[in-house]
Image (cartoon, rainbow, N blue to C red; front, top):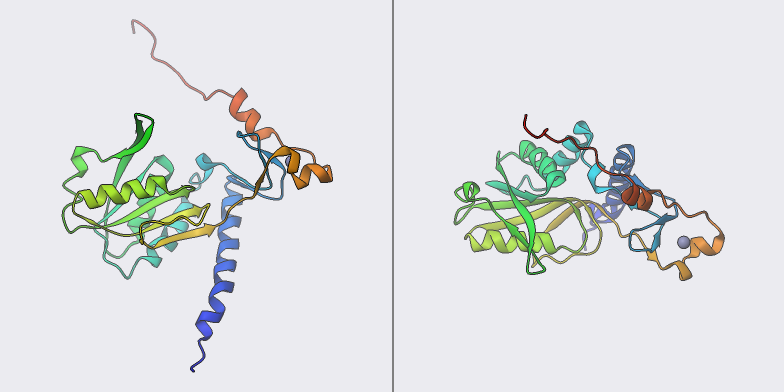
Length: 227
Ligand SMILES: [Zn+2]
């Protein structure tokens, strides 16, 4: 048998790469580790990620987008498809760095009858045609529902999903046999308060994120009446 050194070093490389990406996310202020955090669900965890902050540093986002583009560089891509503001910024960076120079399109997320759905604006439908190769991009993937809906949407238009790239995959999501590439694949363990090992150790609970959500209102301005 011939030795396969590349295969042996692959897990180490993945681990190192993931550490670098976590460090980048930490510097944006989006990722908090080694903490004891109260989640909105009432559960406790050691790690927390604030989705809104993930793509606030353009040079970081560009760098991370380039890594995803490089992973999919061997496949021709006609369009990069995403949803949501964070994913859209990242998908721009992926498309910009991909050698096929794909276009960027986005669907909008909503619910209908309590079920989640994604919708592609009419104007974009001529950019995803029968036979088009589509790369999906998301920032954070937790259940995989949005990505699976995007796959259905692309296939409904007669196009083909090449794969999906994301910054963070929270669980081992299955995507109807499509390859998923994530810069970080990590699940944070969550505990109910009565079985939390950190509570047992007496580590103070950080309620900042839940309080911030509940107490702080977003800044807004409104057009004056009659002006
Ligand atoms: Zn706890």
